[in-house]
Image (cartoon, rainbow, N blue to C red; front, side):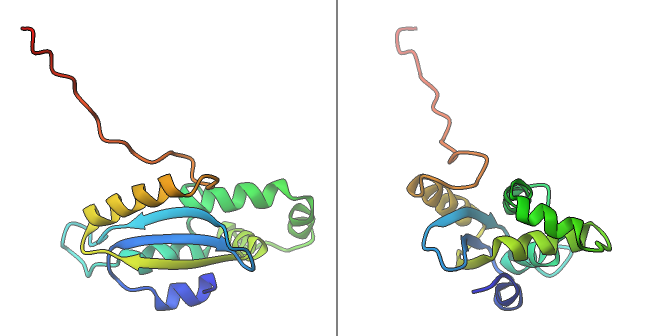
Length: 148
């Protein structure tokens, strides 16, 4: 679904989301959202808060936002569009970048943040050409020397 549709429909639950460019099959980004409840002091926001952040243009400097803005800025057509637009603020710029890249989102709900983290790592390893900056997290392995 479009970014705006996903922002309205996403549940307030933990899970993993995949981003694609409209009309293309390849996943471009995999991310996750935990409960995001401010340590139990607020209603959990989960996937909905993460996706709404992208749709509002607020999330520009990490994760999917950074990837979208970087790709949009590399495109001379987008740079010309920006030059021709009276940009109100950075959020307006962000919305323009997401619209230009034509991001679509789908998600899978998980039981908790830990399960979302496991699923995210699995998907990161399955998709070879993602816009994610970091590779899948691998568990730290400690070697034990039995000779002591």
